Image 1 (tube, rainbow, N blue to C red):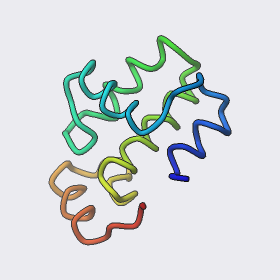
Image 2 (spheres, one colour):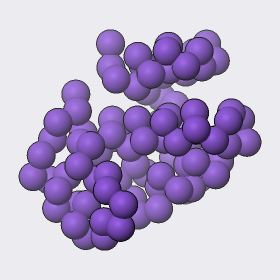
Image 3 (cartoon, one colour):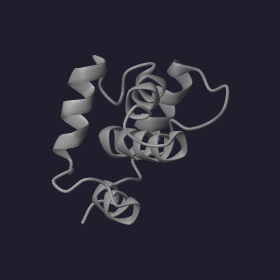
Length: 93
């Protein structure tokens, strides 16, 4: 079971949500998890469907799963630096 699947189960997300959720949300917001601004756009979109803290957790988890790394995280980190860090360390399966 993937981290995203476990997160969805823990948070009691709607039945049927799975890895395909990333693709569906990506299409709706027009960005993929590795794109600049994905996290913020995802939180805005998902906050319409759930509380903001849950939306942040879900979107972070989707970005982790989509990029294969948690290394994009960090307040004030530039997109270029995050991209370099993601390439250096793939730590999400």
